[in-house]
Image (tube, rainbow, N blue to C red; front, side, top):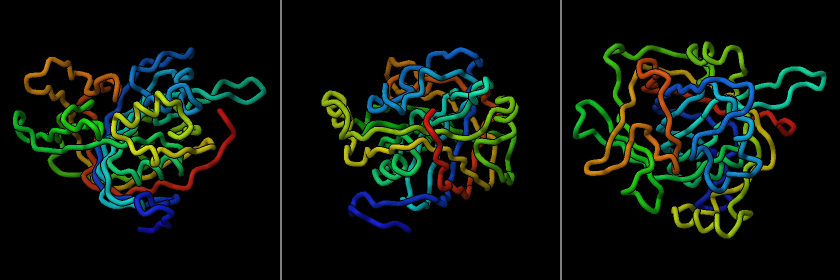
Length: 299
Protein backbone atom coordinates (compact mmCIF):
# COMPACT_ATOMS: atom_id res chain seq x y z
CA UNK A 1 0.00 0.00 0.00
CA UNK A 2 1.50 3.29 -1.11
CA UNK A 3 0.46 5.40 1.85
CA UNK A 4 1.78 7.19 4.84
CA UNK A 5 -0.07 6.62 8.07
CA UNK A 6 -0.85 9.06 10.83
CA UNK A 7 -3.22 6.56 12.43
CA UNK A 8 -2.83 2.80 12.11
CA UNK A 9 -6.57 2.37 11.51
CA UNK A 10 -6.91 5.26 9.08
CA UNK A 11 -3.94 5.43 6.68
CA UNK A 12 -3.45 8.58 4.63
CA UNK A 13 -3.53 7.63 0.93
CA UNK A 14 -3.09 10.68 -1.32
CA UNK A 15 -4.13 10.85 -4.97
CA UNK A 16 -3.61 9.55 -7.58
CA UNK A 17 -5.06 6.07 -7.04
CA UNK A 18 -4.60 3.16 -9.43
CA UNK A 19 -7.37 0.63 -8.92
CA UNK A 20 -8.37 -2.78 -10.22
CA UNK A 21 -11.61 -4.66 -9.78
CA UNK A 22 -15.09 -5.43 -11.09
CA UNK A 23 -17.95 -2.99 -11.55
CA UNK A 24 -21.54 -2.50 -12.73
CA UNK A 25 -22.70 0.76 -14.38
CA UNK A 26 -26.42 1.57 -14.64
CA UNK A 27 -27.44 4.78 -16.45
CA UNK A 28 -30.44 6.62 -15.02
CA UNK A 29 -32.23 9.60 -16.52
CA UNK A 30 -34.58 12.38 -15.42
CA UNK A 31 -36.05 14.84 -17.97
CA UNK A 32 -33.71 17.81 -18.17
CA UNK A 33 -35.05 21.14 -16.89
CA UNK A 34 -33.44 24.58 -17.26
CA UNK A 35 -34.91 25.47 -13.89
CA UNK A 36 -33.79 23.40 -10.88
CA UNK A 37 -35.91 20.42 -9.87
CA UNK A 38 -36.04 18.46 -6.58
CA UNK A 39 -33.69 15.58 -5.97
CA UNK A 40 -35.15 12.24 -4.82
CA UNK A 41 -35.34 11.66 -1.08
CA UNK A 42 -32.15 10.14 0.28
CA UNK A 43 -29.87 11.76 -2.32
CA UNK A 44 -27.65 13.19 0.45
CA UNK A 45 -26.71 11.79 3.84
CA UNK A 46 -27.72 13.77 6.96
CA UNK A 47 -24.12 14.94 7.46
CA UNK A 48 -24.00 16.60 4.03
CA UNK A 49 -27.61 17.80 3.76
CA UNK A 50 -27.82 21.59 3.82
CA UNK A 51 -24.03 22.10 3.77
CA UNK A 52 -21.70 23.23 0.99
CA UNK A 53 -21.64 19.60 -0.20
CA UNK A 54 -25.38 19.72 -0.94
CA UNK A 55 -25.94 20.82 -4.56
CA UNK A 56 -29.64 19.96 -4.50
CA UNK A 57 -30.81 23.51 -5.24
CA UNK A 58 -28.92 23.35 -8.56
CA UNK A 59 -30.11 19.96 -9.82
CA UNK A 60 -31.51 19.94 -13.38
CA UNK A 61 -32.09 16.27 -14.16
CA UNK A 62 -30.54 14.68 -17.23
CA UNK A 63 -28.40 11.57 -17.32
CA UNK A 64 -26.84 10.11 -14.21
CA UNK A 65 -25.78 6.68 -13.06
CA UNK A 66 -25.72 4.18 -10.24
CA UNK A 67 -22.48 2.27 -9.88
CA UNK A 68 -21.58 -0.84 -7.90
CA UNK A 69 -17.86 -1.59 -7.65
CA UNK A 70 -15.72 -4.26 -6.04
CA UNK A 71 -12.15 -2.98 -5.89
CA UNK A 72 -9.63 -5.77 -5.53
CA UNK A 73 -6.66 -3.44 -5.06
CA UNK A 74 -5.93 0.26 -4.68
CA UNK A 75 -4.00 2.62 -2.45
CA UNK A 76 -6.61 2.27 0.33
CA UNK A 77 -6.93 -1.52 0.03
CA UNK A 78 -9.75 -3.75 -1.29
CA UNK A 79 -13.30 -2.49 -0.70
CA UNK A 80 -16.85 -2.47 -2.10
CA UNK A 81 -18.74 0.63 -3.23
CA UNK A 82 -22.28 1.80 -4.06
CA UNK A 83 -22.49 5.20 -5.76
CA UNK A 84 -25.31 7.53 -6.83
CA UNK A 85 -24.76 10.24 -9.47
CA UNK A 86 -28.27 11.71 -9.92
CA UNK A 87 -27.62 13.78 -13.06
CA UNK A 88 -26.59 17.31 -13.95
CA UNK A 89 -25.99 20.21 -11.58
CA UNK A 90 -25.45 23.81 -12.69
CA UNK A 91 -22.65 26.20 -11.90
CA UNK A 92 -22.34 29.84 -12.90
CA UNK A 93 -21.38 30.69 -16.46
CA UNK A 94 -18.90 33.33 -17.48
CA UNK A 95 -19.51 36.91 -16.40
CA UNK A 96 -20.34 37.94 -19.99
CA UNK A 97 -23.75 36.28 -19.74
CA UNK A 98 -23.01 32.80 -21.07
CA UNK A 99 -25.34 29.93 -20.23
CA UNK A 100 -24.61 28.08 -16.96
CA UNK A 101 -22.27 25.12 -17.14
CA UNK A 102 -23.53 21.71 -16.10
CA UNK A 103 -21.60 18.96 -14.39
CA UNK A 104 -22.02 15.61 -12.68
CA UNK A 105 -21.50 14.98 -8.97
CA UNK A 106 -21.59 12.05 -6.58
CA UNK A 107 -24.23 12.88 -3.99
CA UNK A 108 -24.58 9.57 -2.10
CA UNK A 109 -21.90 6.91 -1.80
CA UNK A 110 -21.11 4.02 0.49
CA UNK A 111 -17.90 2.01 0.81
CA UNK A 112 -17.00 -0.93 2.98
CA UNK A 113 -13.91 0.43 4.78
CA UNK A 114 -13.13 3.46 6.92
CA UNK A 115 -9.84 3.97 5.06
CA UNK A 116 -11.76 4.54 1.82
CA UNK A 117 -14.23 6.83 3.61
CA UNK A 118 -11.56 9.12 5.03
CA UNK A 119 -9.34 9.28 1.96
CA UNK A 120 -12.17 9.67 -0.56
CA UNK A 121 -13.48 12.65 1.38
CA UNK A 122 -10.04 14.17 1.90
CA UNK A 123 -8.65 13.64 -1.64
CA UNK A 124 -11.64 14.49 -3.85
CA UNK A 125 -14.48 15.79 -1.66
CA UNK A 126 -16.46 12.59 -2.31
CA UNK A 127 -19.08 12.31 0.49
CA UNK A 128 -18.33 8.71 1.43
CA UNK A 129 -19.93 6.84 4.33
CA UNK A 130 -19.36 3.25 5.40
CA UNK A 131 -21.77 0.36 4.87
CA UNK A 132 -21.94 -3.43 5.03
CA UNK A 133 -22.07 -5.19 1.63
CA UNK A 134 -23.27 -8.72 0.91
CA UNK A 135 -22.90 -10.43 -2.50
CA UNK A 136 -24.51 -13.90 -2.51
CA UNK A 137 -25.94 -16.26 -5.15
CA UNK A 138 -29.69 -15.73 -5.36
CA UNK A 139 -31.85 -18.57 -4.04
CA UNK A 140 -34.86 -17.44 -6.10
CA UNK A 141 -33.33 -16.32 -9.43
CA UNK A 142 -30.89 -18.76 -11.00
CA UNK A 143 -27.70 -17.15 -12.29
CA UNK A 144 -28.28 -13.91 -10.35
CA UNK A 145 -26.29 -12.37 -7.53
CA UNK A 146 -28.17 -10.82 -4.63
CA UNK A 147 -26.61 -7.59 -3.41
CA UNK A 148 -27.66 -6.02 -0.14
CA UNK A 149 -26.18 -2.90 1.42
CA UNK A 150 -26.90 -1.90 5.00
CA UNK A 151 -25.75 0.40 7.76
CA UNK A 152 -22.99 -1.12 9.93
CA UNK A 153 -25.28 -1.07 12.98
CA UNK A 154 -28.07 -3.05 11.25
CA UNK A 155 -26.60 -5.50 8.73
CA UNK A 156 -29.82 -7.54 8.61
CA UNK A 157 -31.90 -4.51 7.55
CA UNK A 158 -30.60 -3.38 4.14
CA UNK A 159 -31.46 0.01 2.66
CA UNK A 160 -30.51 -1.22 -0.84
CA UNK A 161 -31.32 -4.54 -2.50
CA UNK A 162 -31.03 -5.78 -6.07
CA UNK A 163 -30.38 -8.82 -8.24
CA UNK A 164 -27.48 -8.59 -10.70
CA UNK A 165 -27.40 -10.83 -13.76
CA UNK A 166 -25.29 -10.78 -16.93
CA UNK A 167 -27.22 -10.53 -20.19
CA UNK A 168 -27.29 -13.45 -22.61
CA UNK A 169 -26.70 -10.90 -25.39
CA UNK A 170 -23.00 -10.81 -24.50
CA UNK A 171 -21.80 -14.33 -23.68
CA UNK A 172 -18.21 -13.14 -23.97
CA UNK A 173 -16.61 -10.06 -22.43
CA UNK A 174 -15.58 -7.30 -24.84
CA UNK A 175 -12.65 -4.89 -24.37
CA UNK A 176 -13.36 -1.27 -23.44
CA UNK A 177 -11.05 1.67 -22.89
CA UNK A 178 -12.59 5.00 -21.95
CA UNK A 179 -13.36 7.34 -19.10
CA UNK A 180 -16.21 5.83 -17.10
CA UNK A 181 -18.02 9.17 -17.31
CA UNK A 182 -17.67 9.30 -21.09
CA UNK A 183 -19.47 6.19 -22.34
CA UNK A 184 -21.10 6.55 -25.76
CA UNK A 185 -24.51 6.09 -24.07
CA UNK A 186 -23.75 8.90 -21.63
CA UNK A 187 -22.48 11.18 -24.40
CA UNK A 188 -25.70 10.88 -26.37
CA UNK A 189 -27.86 11.46 -23.31
CA UNK A 190 -25.82 14.39 -22.04
CA UNK A 191 -25.88 16.28 -25.36
CA UNK A 192 -22.39 17.71 -24.96
CA UNK A 193 -22.40 18.60 -21.26
CA UNK A 194 -19.03 18.06 -19.60
CA UNK A 195 -18.50 14.54 -18.33
CA UNK A 196 -16.61 15.40 -15.15
CA UNK A 197 -17.30 15.17 -11.44
CA UNK A 198 -17.38 18.48 -9.58
CA UNK A 199 -17.29 17.84 -5.84
CA UNK A 200 -17.65 20.81 -3.46
CA UNK A 201 -16.29 20.82 0.12
CA UNK A 202 -17.62 18.19 2.51
CA UNK A 203 -17.96 18.73 6.27
CA UNK A 204 -16.37 16.70 9.04
CA UNK A 205 -18.52 14.82 11.52
CA UNK A 206 -16.78 16.75 14.28
CA UNK A 207 -18.28 20.00 12.95
CA UNK A 208 -21.90 18.87 12.82
CA UNK A 209 -24.73 19.26 15.31
CA UNK A 210 -25.07 16.89 18.24
CA UNK A 211 -28.31 15.52 16.74
CA UNK A 212 -26.66 14.65 13.42
CA UNK A 213 -23.64 13.24 15.23
CA UNK A 214 -25.95 10.96 17.19
CA UNK A 215 -27.60 9.75 13.96
CA UNK A 216 -24.17 8.93 12.54
CA UNK A 217 -23.18 7.00 15.65
CA UNK A 218 -26.48 5.12 15.74
CA UNK A 219 -25.97 3.99 12.15
CA UNK A 220 -22.54 2.60 13.06
CA UNK A 221 -20.34 5.21 11.40
CA UNK A 222 -16.80 5.80 12.61
CA UNK A 223 -17.04 9.56 13.05
CA UNK A 224 -13.25 9.86 12.95
CA UNK A 225 -13.31 8.64 9.33
CA UNK A 226 -15.81 11.34 8.31
CA UNK A 227 -13.20 13.99 7.67
CA UNK A 228 -13.63 17.28 5.79
CA UNK A 229 -12.32 18.73 2.57
CA UNK A 230 -12.27 22.50 2.12
CA UNK A 231 -11.91 22.85 -1.66
CA UNK A 232 -14.00 22.30 -4.78
CA UNK A 233 -12.50 19.54 -6.90
CA UNK A 234 -12.94 18.54 -10.54
CA UNK A 235 -11.94 14.97 -11.39
CA UNK A 236 -12.40 12.65 -14.36
CA UNK A 237 -11.40 9.02 -13.71
CA UNK A 238 -10.38 6.78 -16.62
CA UNK A 239 -10.75 3.02 -16.92
CA UNK A 240 -10.06 0.17 -19.29
CA UNK A 241 -10.99 -3.47 -19.10
CA UNK A 242 -13.49 -6.09 -20.21
CA UNK A 243 -17.28 -5.72 -20.19
CA UNK A 244 -20.61 -7.45 -20.74
CA UNK A 245 -24.18 -6.21 -20.79
CA UNK A 246 -25.99 -6.74 -17.50
CA UNK A 247 -29.34 -6.27 -15.78
CA UNK A 248 -30.56 -5.12 -12.37
CA UNK A 249 -33.81 -6.55 -11.01
CA UNK A 250 -35.78 -5.88 -7.80
CA UNK A 251 -35.06 -8.25 -4.93
CA UNK A 252 -38.01 -8.30 -2.51
CA UNK A 253 -37.18 -9.56 0.94
CA UNK A 254 -38.97 -12.77 1.87
CA UNK A 255 -42.00 -11.98 4.00
CA UNK A 256 -41.43 -8.21 3.89
CA UNK A 257 -44.05 -5.64 2.94
CA UNK A 258 -41.63 -3.05 1.56
CA UNK A 259 -41.72 -2.13 -2.13
CA UNK A 260 -38.19 -2.71 -3.47
CA UNK A 261 -39.01 -1.76 -7.07
CA UNK A 262 -36.88 1.37 -6.62
CA UNK A 263 -33.91 -0.65 -5.24
CA UNK A 264 -33.19 1.90 -2.48
CA UNK A 265 -35.44 2.58 0.50
CA UNK A 266 -35.61 6.34 -0.18
CA UNK A 267 -33.77 7.17 3.01
CA UNK A 268 -30.44 5.38 3.20
CA UNK A 269 -30.29 5.40 -0.61
CA UNK A 270 -32.62 7.11 -3.11
CA UNK A 271 -35.17 5.19 -5.13
CA UNK A 272 -34.47 5.32 -8.87
CA UNK A 273 -35.55 3.88 -12.21
CA UNK A 274 -33.10 2.52 -14.75
CA UNK A 275 -32.85 4.34 -18.08
CA UNK A 276 -32.92 0.90 -19.72
CA UNK A 277 -32.42 -2.60 -18.43
CA UNK A 278 -30.77 -3.65 -21.69
CA UNK A 279 -27.89 -1.16 -21.96
CA UNK A 280 -26.15 -1.53 -18.61
CA UNK A 281 -22.49 -2.49 -18.32
CA UNK A 282 -20.78 -5.11 -16.19
CA UNK A 283 -17.04 -4.52 -16.26
CA UNK A 284 -15.88 -8.01 -15.40
CA UNK A 285 -12.38 -6.65 -14.81
CA UNK A 286 -10.92 -3.18 -15.07
CA UNK A 287 -7.98 -0.97 -14.27
CA UNK A 288 -8.90 2.56 -13.24
CA UNK A 289 -6.96 5.74 -12.60
CA UNK A 290 -8.42 8.22 -10.13
CA UNK A 291 -6.17 11.25 -10.70
CA UNK A 292 -5.09 14.20 -8.65
CA UNK A 293 -8.09 16.56 -8.97
CA UNK A 294 -8.15 20.07 -10.36
CA UNK A 295 -8.95 22.68 -7.73
CA UNK A 296 -11.45 25.32 -8.86
CA UNK A 297 -13.18 28.31 -7.33
CA UNK A 298 -16.56 27.84 -5.69
CA UNK A 299 -19.69 26.94 -7.61
